[in-house]
Amino acid sequence: MPTFEQISQQLDHQAIEVPSWAYGNSGTRFKVFGSAGTPRTVQEKIADAAAVHRFTGLAPKVALHIPWDKVEDYAALTAYAAEQGVQIGTINSNTFQDDDYKLGGLTHHDPAIRRKAIDHHLECLQIMDATGSQDLKIWLADGSNYPGQADMRSRQDRLAESLATIYAELKDDQRLVLEYKIFEPAFYHTDVPDWGTALVQVQALGEKAMVCLDTGHHAPSTNVEFIVAQLLRLGRLGSFDFNSRFYADDDLIVGSADPFQLFRIMFEVVRGGGYAADSGVAFMLDQCHNVEKKIPGQIRSVLNVQEMTARALMVDTEALAAAQQAGDVLGAHEVFMDAFYTDVRPDLAAWRESRGLPASPMRAYAESGYQETIEADRVGGTQLSW
Ligand code: PSV
Ligand code: MN
Ligand code: MN
Image 1 (cartoon, protein in one colour):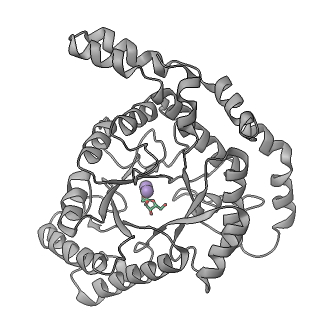
Image 2: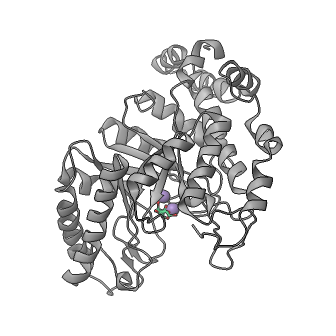
């Protein structure tokens, strides 16, 4: 097995994009709990995202969600982010909170509603021009609750047409990334429920259209790393929305429910070339911190991704290939598990120190006083939800 020393340089270029909405208050449909220090402005969300980067060196970009993060002046917001030491990353559209979209957005039977949803995406593209963002990420709540309610097939055609209209406006260096999700808020059918549908739709658009894999968006027991392998193989894995789940789209801290799954995913990412610095795969988090503190929640998340990446890089691929070739079932499995069971935490602490970062970002954050400062300062105004 390679030593940590042998793989450590490959950790240098790791970059994880954090979601602005992780710093706002969130909850379930039962209750959204307020919490001290929660941002009241988009700038405060960006400042918190920048704190995650300062303590970990792992999170140089923050993704925005429009209209949650709508501002007057995006050039000024971009400059503010740069002052804080981060960049604005993916722009996420939102067609799921407006009454007009009750029966759908890009798939709606009424051309006027479809036009409104398309125009929202064109506005997102303009924001990307101002922020220098590369990706427009589209997740649709579109679907239906009852058999017979909607014509599923014509909705696919309308979706293709709407996406093509948006795609036509992309600049050369911009991408459209389509995210699928099995269900919720629609409970009978969803218009982009799976990677197959997302793939078919993006392949019809062109080279600049990719698929986003949110780890919480599959049926229980789905082999998610197989989907990773397949999308990478086809050159269509645009991004991840990392989180973990016990039941459905729980949006818990990535690597908390199933670290082994995260390891398996990162192994396929490395195996398929998705970890290369120029792979084009954006590694984002899509999480909510309903009961835990948000900034440490994000720090824990990026550290979990780093830890499983290090372990995945340590798989002895030569020994693995040899065992596979020899048909040595348990030998191959053992090679794989050896890397998973390797505790890289002390090595990662030393790696951080050698790069001027705190050995324990969690402890350094707790001792920094940042949390106390924001809790004292951010009184008045309205705490942001998502
Ligand atoms: C939908 O469940 C989703 O995963 C999409 O990425 C949305 O943009 C995001 O959650 C909002 O939290
Ligand atoms: Mn998501
Ligand atoms: Mn989700």
